[in-house]
Length: 174
Image (cartoon, rainbow, N blue to C red):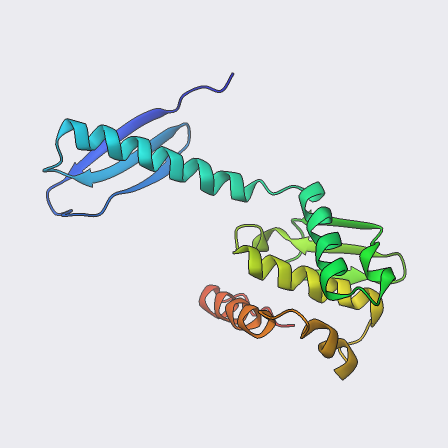
């Protein structure tokens, strides 16, 4: 049985329309405009709890889900390369600070940085397909990039990752 979190509502006279919420340890803090009625407060607290739960669910993506996603991507974008559809393992890792993902073609393992977990699905798909393509072609040759380009959002995802890296000062490049 999951415990209901302690909810702290903070009203602000400066806040006009926006509502936000965040976790502070065991508490959930909900920030609302001061002029909200009690009914509006209850409605917005419920709505923000749902949003927090959805965000946290996205963050709890599992290795099993990642493996299933990799197999689906390989079947769709690399059907002519059966090795790509059978990686030995695909998992999230905490120790990748200089790259989004890595692949060891010799043993078929793929590791994806935990930093990617909360990114949009299409970005996760791009990082996975990039690493799956390394199971076929280990280098970043033009043939490799042709495989990656089969994913329709590859350029958009690369731009997204470059933007995240630049904004956070990570210095992560492909």
